[in-house]
Length: 107
Image (cartoon, rainbow, N blue to C red; front, side, top):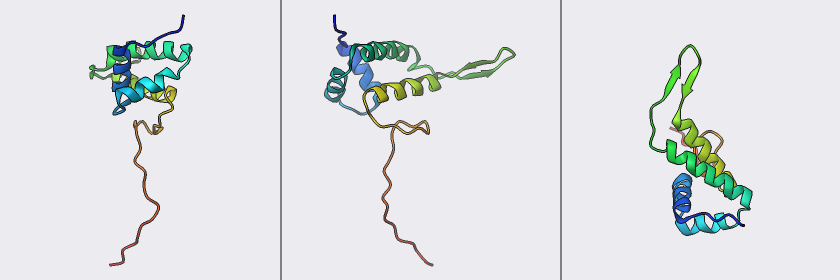
């Protein structure tokens, strides 16, 4: 039986990728195979657990390193990759194109 993403899952995916519209996300997700949809559902479940957590803990003798921000970025990167949406490898979710032409100013 094919996997179908629910309306709530699609809305969460829209939230994860940023400003894409619901209809765009729905269209992009409809092109995914069942394995990708299943992975998307797993990421939606993880996202629900970390989206509103902001406490970051590092250090400790046993190497504790809890950073929900890093988890959110990893989920955003995976989801955007599955949907063939661009992202920057520097950690951001989007990039701003910079024009090639400029004039130098001599003062």
